[in-house]
Length: 312
Length: 267
Image 1 (cartoon, rainbow over the protein chains, first blue to last red):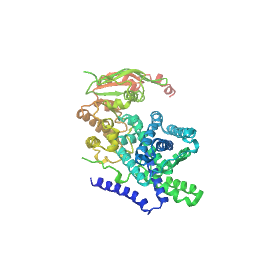
Image 2: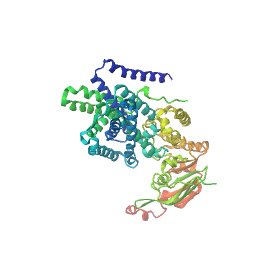
Image 3: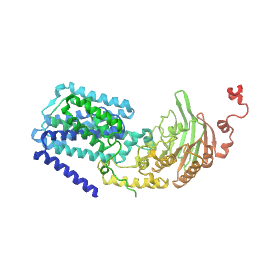
Image 4: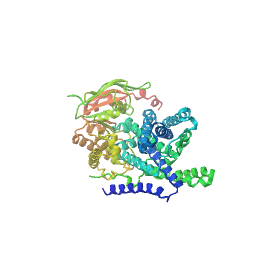
């Protein structure tokens, strides 16, 4: 009970902070922008970790999902909704983008019944490429030039709120029969089947939810940048997400948050190095993998995120 | 009385190799049934066929009168059948408690929605099963390992944890695949007593694969002997022990060994 009060207070405090800091001008717009990228990357990392960390598959096409969410929500605010309503309906727009993306998640979920490991990774890779080439060839969406005209609806409070929602739902999922089942599939799929874990249903859940949040992140991204083009959702983007997941640690929510924050901030901090940051950044990663192969928090969790298993 | 498990004319081939040939078996409720045979006789294949690991090409399997031949594994297990494995298959990085809870995965009757929001229904169901899981851990003297990853448990405890995982769903039929494998005399004796106790305590029906004669002779009321996929004998253990084809399968043919083993004729 006490824990719950503390957490609620923490959430309220964070939201206030996210609202007050940019408005008061204490934080310059550049830093606010970076914090928003950190938040969006946290959502992406949390969602990718469901598949790569908990289910134990290797999805390398997460940017494909992000693209679908970005384009669907952008179409909604630019073409469908009257401009004055857009700020009020923004959460619904994001959810709509997320839901469409979740449906696209099924495209990968069904092959995952029979295909595992490297082969499923190829399926996700192909998915990413297909999404990107479809977008490049849809002239109506601007083709390779991209899609623009979205109002700037993403702000720090929204990003913080969505990070918290994602964290809340992912954490609840992980500490449930569903999360246990996903980890059982990761450990030993045959044994999971033979202890009554409905592996097919759980795989569908994992891909649906993971894709949903990637779609939300895509929507936030589109309405932050106010311009999206298919190239922003290439394999390179997927690779960034993988790096954040494995840096923070697979199978860990805390790790996802840390990985996204560290990676995003590090790349910004190294900006003065110019081209050299693409040497220094990856080098740090290599060192981390040598000294901590499971990432910063691999398979471990901060105490405030864990549930205590009550012994009767 | 409907038999709890009825296998009719079951065949299975791996490529051209006949692993199970015309296998039939009837297990009545309350039986402690043994399935024995030398290595490679097809015992584990029979278990894999019963639990839906392999598709069945010929034959039918009925569980409590229902035809489960074409069901997928999770459905078969959820219907009240549980099994363990010859080489332990625990979820090694998950805690002992989680391992046991996973045995009741299909019995956690709440929806994705409840899991995402930890609704009162979720709390109720989780509490009920975690209580049951702790009871089972206590029954198997594993309470102190509740939070320990399964891989860190001693070998014998891992075997018993696997049985606990199988029992939490209150199955009506338990399939044990060589539960005494890799155990020494003393451990095997403890295990025999444990299985006998569980059989009574949980009013279970047990079908047991074993390779050590001693375990089967001490435990089972009925025994079926397999060799090269074929059923060579069936009956109570005392009769089986005397059966000439069983002795032959286990010890080799008596007498003219030189005919059986060309190598020995050189000696």
